[in-house]
Amino acid sequence: MTERMIIVTLLRAFIFLSTIFIIQFYFAKRLRNSLLQSGYFKDKRKLSIAIVSVILFFDLFPVFNTFASIYGVINPTTNFEIPKVFVIDYFFRIPSWMLILIIVQVFLLSAPIDLFFFALKKINLKISNRLNFYISRYFFLLVIFFTGYIPLRIYYEFKNVVVEKRTYHINSHNPELNNFRIAFISDIQADRFTDAKRVTNYISKINELNPDIVLAGGDFLTGDSDYIPIIASLVKNIKSNYGVYSCIGDHDFFAFKRNYWRSIAEVKTALEKNNVKMIDDGNLILMINESKIKITFLTNTYVKSYNEKILDSLAQANQDAKLKILVTHQPDEKIALKANEYGYNLYLTGHTHGGQVNFLFPFLNITPVRLETKFISGDYWFGDLLMIVNRGLGMSTMPIRYHSIPEISLIEIKTESSAHN
Image 1 (cartoon, rainbow, N blue to C red):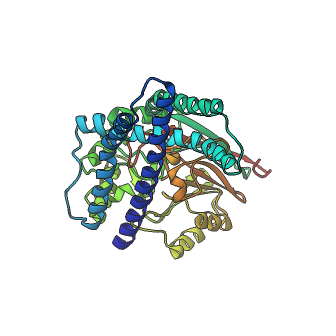
Image 2 (image 1 turned 30 degrees about the horizontal axis):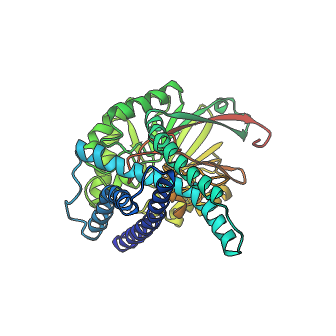
Image 3 (image 1 turned 45 degrees about the vertical axis):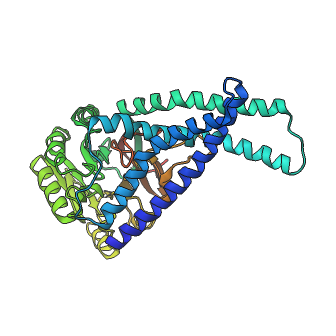
């Protein structure tokens, strides 16, 4: 496990830093040229130094944070970390990530155009000075627009939650299951950014839905043991007719600095004391009058990957259930295919935060999460199995969301003889 985490961490760090530096080099050069063409700046050298200095200053935090993460994985017993204080958070951490988002977003919408005209020049097609002027203006307008848009969008997503409603039809005439309402949540990740006020608002929206049962995809806290009692005391306020149940998430293992099993034990205990049952590789059987519902909780995380034999064993039990639901933290295509073979109706997952950061680009959803999985958010069908990837509430790595508004999934069951629509 440690070797896997070291390799993954080093690979991510290399890809992140090398990509960011290349993009920033392009951005700095393009911004300098645009400002020089505006006529307001004359000294090319001083302008270059000013732009590079600002970028490098705000690079200090993500670079330092990246190396601190690597050091923490290589030396799991270390207590070294960047101080979690207001000044660092709001004058360095958040502005640094915002600047990176602005630079990358502008790059994605300007570099293809530059590349296109560069190709034209290579085949000896002349580009007029007037056209070069308009291209520079376009770049500068992108910078101005996204410098305003991105902070506003981040603030909007920090303050709001949407309910994504689905209807799932099962081939049954059992009236007890008709209109059965399932609320699915994931990745609350309580920390100093996803604080008690934010979590309370999220829970209030869950309760407004009057769900029959609430299922969760894990990750109740980001990784600080101080938040175990806090999140436990908050989630006890979730209301439903048949209770609140969760699988285990990645971050539930991280409360105590790589002491994974102590972390998960304390998280489970605290949640269960507050009426939230976290299930590690097990089945939950609910009887709604004469109708049986089977909910399988399968642990699939970085610390503990799913075991195929355990999945087979859990899936083969209680095959007579009228409604079968599988809950895991990380989405997995192999799990989905096998769940469909065993006749599961729903496969509920989280983990991705809906990409957390999704850049605007024509016809494509560009997000770093695609390096890990193709299942970013929303609905995916595998035969009659509906897999739902929930965007969750919390944040990882950077304390911001961009085009990934927090979500509560509401699934209403309809009983009828026809197949799903």
